[in-house]
Image (cartoon, rainbow over all chains, first blue to last red; front, side, top):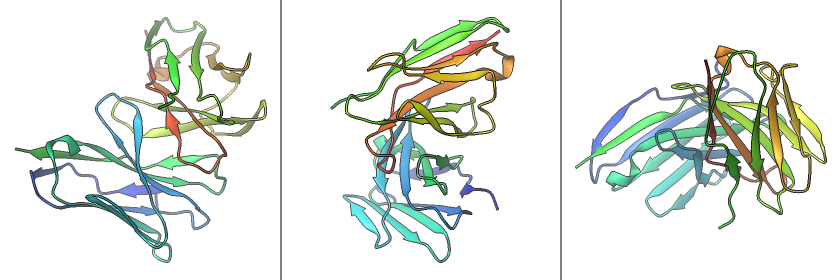
Length: 110
Length: 113
């Protein structure tokens, strides 16, 4: 299994749609989990941390299933400005090193 | 909001030349990182740095690479003899405690010709 594996995408959705991203990770010792977004040729920017109990921030909901080593991100009522690549990011055995998934490109269409 | 700043934004160099990429991490952060992203590929960890020494490095970070914190604010990545395959976007990042989310700089695009 790859260290961090995401849906390959790309996803094309209309404005207002709900879209879900899935991610699996291989290192059961991982402690920290994040979703970042990356606009074309820009730096990754933190979208949200992911907690065991699940967490929500406005239209965004993240879930973590440690037993299945699975992370998800749900975007409700998608906006044009949500168009970006979504990166699943997991700490390695050491918290100094983050491992990135390859990302899933989302395009929200008018 | 405090930012990680990187210079230059774009560096073009010839194969075999040395380059130094510069970063100013957020001032109260203690952990510093370099990542790179080859065009169309994923973001890859290069090295982490804490308390004036390397904490962890990847297999990419071979003897051609070095990092330094020459003063209280700058954090540099040196590539001694660049190769074509070093062409990538290089991101500097920092965080206060090694566990928090990373704050990334806006990157240096390195083109080796």
